[in-house]
Length: 239
Image 1 (cartoon, rainbow, N blue to C red):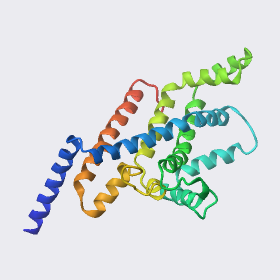
Image 2: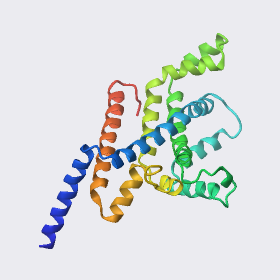
Image 3: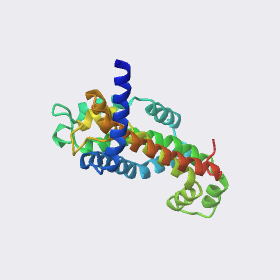
Image 4: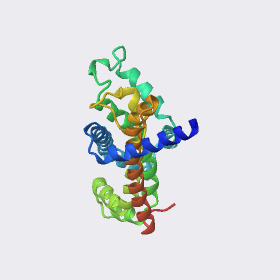
C-alpha cells in the first residue's frame, strides 16, 4: 500500500509540474527569466576576451605559454562550488571587495559564471583557431594586414566551431548550481535561478516546480544538442 501511494504521489508531481509549466505561473517564469538573463549576460561579457586570449595562445609564442594553457585546462576542472566559495570570501563584508556590496546580487552571479565559462571558452576556441588554415594568417602577415583585421578574418573562418564553443559554455553555466547558490543566495525574484530552485524545492519535497523547471532545462539541452549536432552534420566541427 505504501509503495502504491508513493508511485501515485510521484505521478501527481510529474503531472503537476507539466501543468505548472504551461499555466504561465509568474513565480516559475520569473525564475526562468533570472536564469537566462544572468547566463546570457555572463556569456556576452566573456566571449570577446575569450576570443582574444585564444588568439594569442594559438598564434603567439611567449615565455610561460605552456603554463597558461595548463592553467586554463586546470580551471575547467575546478568545482563550481569552490569558485563560489572563493568569490563569497572576496565579496563578503569582511572580504577585500566587501565595499562593492555585490554579494547576493545578480552581478555576483554573473561574475561567478564568467569565471566558470572563461576557461571553457578559451580551451575550445584555442583548439578551433589552431585548426584553421595557417595560410590565411601567413597571407595576412605578408600583406601587412593589422592584427585586428587578421583576428576578424580568423574568427570568420572559424565561426562555426567558435559558435559551438559559445553554446557549450552557455550550457555549462546555465545548469551550474554551486556558485549561484553561494554568491546569489537563492533569493526569490532576484537571484533564484533554475538549478538553485530545483535544489531547494526538491529538498523541501515540493517536486511540482522542480519538475517544471527540469522540463525547461531538458528542452534547453535538447535545443543546444540539436544545434551542435547540426554543426557536426555540416562538417563544421572537428572531433
